[in-house]
Every structure is written in structure tokens, then in C-alpha cells.
Image 1 (cartoon, rainbow, N blue to C red):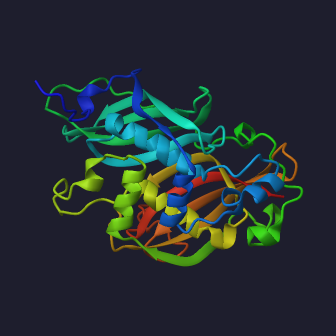
Image 2 (cartoon, rainbow, N blue to C red; image 1 turned 90 degrees about the vertical axis):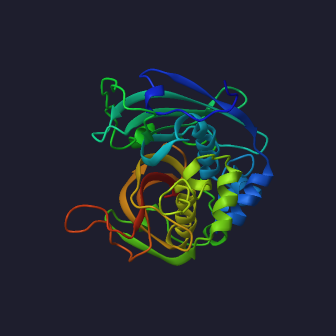
Length: 341
């Protein structure tokens, strides 16, 4: 008998299981300060109460990826502690802002399961929902993870969920009261509004960040992410600790300020893939492609759909002639953000 938790293996998941994740977490302004210390994040609406109030909000909400990281971290001990890799995301929606003082909880439902042909691992799909202290949903997304098997027993019947390729613009949730009709472009940092972007446009965000082991470890602990591949150098044959994919997300999002300073709020995650592993010492660059634009019912508020690519290579390069991701591409993220029209 043991009181410790070795984490779930592929055999421990069953279609329809609902997992309630420990531990509730109350968010304070400290998370904002640490987030801005770890990443060069400076979108105005997440930086200034006065700017947020000029946009119709009561105060400045936490960065949207703080919500994502906090909810994601809750799920790791139950979903991906024994993961080989986190493979992708879909159908993500930010439903309500996260404010200092909110307490976050999370649950996940198993919606798909499929053993890999090698018989040593399998893929598990879960739909995760984060909620605040009032029981209101703040975030919902699907992710799929490759998980090790405990043994060599028979596999369950494969069920692969059908997922929407994109969250419809009509399904985007606009924060209550958001109004960009008095938006201050000077304080925001750039003059570009929704009408200045065209579908197919590629934006090189120019700047770069070299990832250090220390900052990655701090970030992974901050979000209470306990996945072994991020902490234990003996967990991989090469003796390296894998950089948490969310760390790459936040770095790339922060770098995208240069060219997309007015893409203020992330409201949907259409899809995403961690294309290649990232390790300490890698120098990360980012570029974006405009995939779509849409109107919303909120005054002065439009939506822009973007592909955000984190890479150690050149801007604009995504795939090789074989259709596979270029070896330098670390992240391919498809998301909707809100921007003044």
C-alpha cells in the first residue's frame, strides 16, 4: 500500500469520466506581477486599471493566458503527469475575465481515447472547464495528450471526437461592458486598428527571447504544473527538461505586441500544436498570420483571427515541402483576439 500518487496511465481513463481537479487557487495581483516579470507582456488593457476603465471595464483583468495556465496547471496531476507529449488544443473559449481575488477550480471530461500502434502509449482527449468562486465558467477547451501505458493489456475501443476546426465568430464571448469607442491608441502603443489588417498578411514580430532554465522552472512552478518532463532531468533519455508549452505560448504572445499591440484580449483558441520540443538555450522568435476578421456587437470592438507561430528559425516559415512542420517551429497557435475597429 502507498499513499503517494504515481499519476494516471492510459489504462486509467474511460470515456465519459469526469475528473474534479485539486487544488482550488485564489489569484491575486501577485500573479500579474510574476507574469509580467516572466514574459515581456505589455498589452495595455491587462496592464492598467485606468486604461481598462476607459474601455468600459471595472478594472484591469488578469492576462488571458494567466487564466489558461492556472486552469491547465490544475489538470496536470490527473491528465498529463505521465504524458509523453501534449499534442494539441481545440474549441477553446474564454467565457469571463479573471480578476484578482477570484478562486479558480477545474474539471475535465474524457471525450476520446485511442491506443497508439506501438502498444506502449495512447492518446486521451479531455474537455476542461475552469470556474470561478461563483461557479461561473471562465474558460473551456479541449486538449489531447499522449500518455504512457502501465502495461501491455488490451486497449479500450478507440473513440476519436469530432472537433470544430474554428470557434465561430458569433460564438465569441465579449466581456460585459467592453467598449472601444474611446480607445487611446497612443497609450496602447500602436495606431493599427482592425481595418488596417488584411487576411493573409504576415507580421514578423522582430524581437527574440532566449529561454533560460531558471525562468522556465519558475513559470512551471507558478502554474503548479507537475508534469515530470518539465522537472525531472532523468525522465528523458537525453537528460533534458522539456520547456512547458504554455511558457512558449506566453513568450510568443508577449513578443506579438510588436505589430499587434491592439489585439488586447484573447477570446478563443481554435487550434494549436506544439510542433517540436523546446529546451533551455533556445532563442525564440514569433510571427503571425492574419486568418480572418469579424465584427462583434460590442461598440467599437472587432475580432481578429490570428495564427501565432513561435520558432527558432525564420519568420513566415511553417512547413517543409513534405507538409510537415519545419524543424525550427515550436508552436502553431490559432486564436481569436479583440481589437478596436
